[in-house]
Length: 237
Image (cartoon, rainbow, N blue to C red):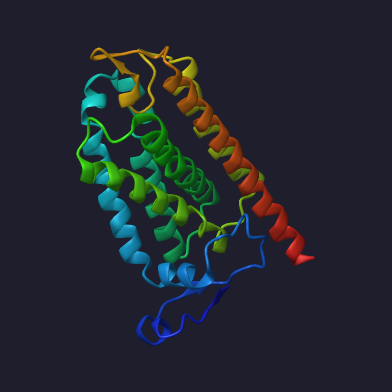
């Protein structure tokens, strides 16, 4: 079903379908309804911004693509794939489709990469060795990704099968990124904190901290997706 959640003066300017909002705990739905509704009313703009971000992300990873065997390319562009997932997820909802597996991938991707990247930039990498504008762009654009992830509950139910797809994809990513690369070297985003005398050193503490953050966020996304599922089912009783 779709409702028309009032958004004050914006409601008279923007007219569009807005999905109903279930009564969910704050930890699975932390974004204020006003912001959620505005995002849904501007959904095609949000989709376009994410597609632009996807294109920029693939360009950003161009050096790493060149250093990675082609067979492992799908595991390289983590953030661009996350923005692609959310763009396709929102577009599917707007067009009346309901691929729950895609919604789950979008949620996991936005939450995981949206929080992992700011952690890495602020705690591990620092602002050195990168343009100031790009550094802060990476931080805030990824936080916006996490924010987007928390609106998916408005149109997705996160059934167990869909969550399993997302857990499998991002779980395998964690393995090949940090623990057991199948072909070539580890496939995580290049960390400036790993460069020692101009050479990448995966034995430094930064590698372990980045891995711990990635695994923790995969677990957190799993919990939040399943918690959303449970709370929605409870609300239907």
